[in-house]
Amino acid sequence: MAEYTPLFKPGQEVTLTASATITGGNVVVVSGDETVAPSSGASAAAVGVAKYDAANGAKVGVVMGGVHELAASGAINAGDPVTSAASGAVAAFSGTTYSTIIGKALKAAASSKVIVRLF
Image (cartoon, rainbow, N blue to C red):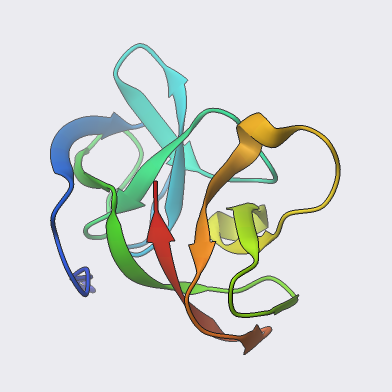
């Protein structure tokens, strides 16, 4: 099982139930009562980052807040606000639905890993 450790952990952690297969390091969204799934796009329901892999129906630790190294979906510039994206990644925010902003990029990325401070 792959492990994921946040770079810093000043935020809170909570244990929820996976409603789909989750990989450690995925941005997860609330998918029902006390359940989460990997993000599939920009969502105001994003709640944090999965601490480790979890099968559908298993418990998963979720880190809320902090600084993380996450998968980037497309180019992201340092300082860009970011939103959840497909496959549990993050993308540069564009548009006017500001409730989908989940953090700010601390380092630039081009479809690889990006360091993000989650709000």
